[in-house]
Length: 277
Length: 266
Image 1 (tube, chains in turn blue, red):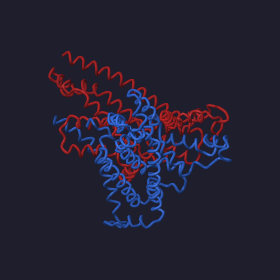
Image 2 (cartoon, chains in turn green, cyan):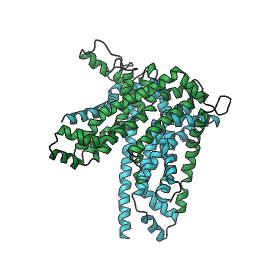
Image 3 (cartoon, each protein chain N blue to C red):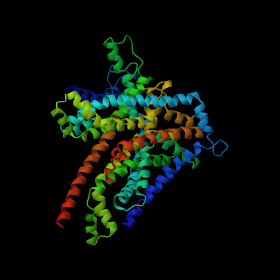
Image 4 (spheres, one colour):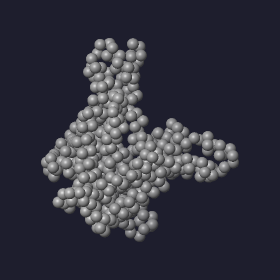
């Protein structure tokens, strides 16, 4: 048993050297001045630069829209899954997980093909005379939101389904026995009980959306920059590591706040399936 | 009824873009158009005759295989000590092991980039392997622990009672029993590394691109159907890896059942 305990040393050492230490160094760099010494000057510079503020605001705005879109599409889907016979739900869930087995890059490219000027969607729009000429869908807000919703929707569905599946059906039946209409049963019994899933799924999707890089970079226009893209620009083009560290720290703080809330409301172990640990 | 249609529409929304790649990859023209005006295999033959694409593919496969083994070996250690050992600071250590899954990838990537730039490791395969292994460890650890937690430690103790050394008991009993988890960990680590863009985007040398980096640099400037062909090939490879893994898993599950039956008899 004591020797089993020692097995933690190699993985822990690996992660401390290549994960914990580099991130601690990044946090330290965010409060380091150009001449050394502890200072908040880079934070001040970020908060004074309208372009950076705009990108930060954009990041939160896009993440919020994507979260709303996932919720709008995901809630009815998860509700349906929670109502079908127990043995059929896993089949639906398997279909919902299919996109996960192809690369994010390739999936984003597929959406670029669909939404492009000469893509399928524009063919249908023009063919049905819904639009006089091809509409610009790609390289817009719309493109980014569709692409990100596509990637994040399964997370929302699974988070909602996990809660809905656990709702005690006898409560809904009891409401029916007392004469509540189907709509009332849903609104006053099922929906309130499903709220932890709504809050949890939304937090989860929002937090993941904040750090998105590939989809906004490929499907967005110049005004759809998000923080992860700005971090990449800061490192690779501006060669400004302090700026990148400040932005990284801000993104990390926002992510951790979201996840701590998630943990309080739903419990993090649900998300990572760590029941075994 | 309406709900069922809605759910089916969602499933179509999720699957259609993956399927749409096939006709695009078979397009006969070089500009992007859907549906394509004619059919051909030219994009597949372009891929297989282009040394740039092939070397990116082989480089990605090679690195991802190494990542799969590194991450799985480390995760096996972590899982064994979590499930079996009476760890001090268990909760804190657990958080460290799972944190790479929680911290946004761009942050892990730049933090490692700063470290590797100082160590002059940027532009090496080692840097990519280390970075992608960090990202792979949480999922691999969860996969192995969940299998490990599900079986009876007395099987191993019985082997030791019957004269096996702890090392023998580990190699002959524990490893075969945890095999489904190990296979799953290898698979998911491989696929995660094979798909990873950010680490390689920062760490790869300009002379040797990984497959995602090459796709990335092409998609930004032109959307030629060759990328759809690459997508089809990559997805087929992913599916093949998963199917191979699933069959390996069911075989090791059968072995597990057999071993437990034998142990029960003993």
